[in-house]
Image (cartoon, rainbow, N blue to C red; front, top):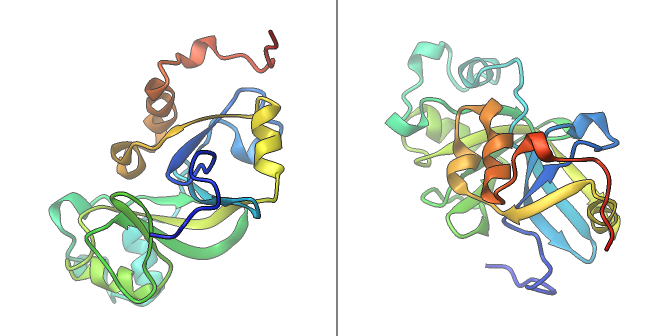
Length: 197
């Protein structure tokens, strides 16, 4: 596992949950899984915004399989979601997955979850020898040094430790409400105004 500059303040392995007043429409009602966070900035993936392309169609488009019928996914991997991971490098793909798969390019993110940015994992998933659970994301969200902290302070995001069941859930529409539920928050009661005591 990588060492973190400040374990207590790092948001690696956490969710960012967009508040109603999120100024950037690209992040409205989004849940972001944070993969990296340090004094240099942060990087994560939106895990609840769908892409029009299915996983089977993506594997066919990338010529990993000739026909979607050739895909042999493990039982829990049949519904691999393809998410719009963020506004940066939207044509670049990443796979967030359970830590039971490892390759030379696999990076451990947090307990139980890893990231692999290469086609090898897609080939493995298509043959039924990939990770137990996975989601594919196209693009990512990135923040410069201090930017994410400023957005949190401005009431742009709520944060909480990530729940892997939510990360890998195929029902993308429910992830926002489920993530808020970790904090005991009902979306109907959220306000875009920052409170100050």
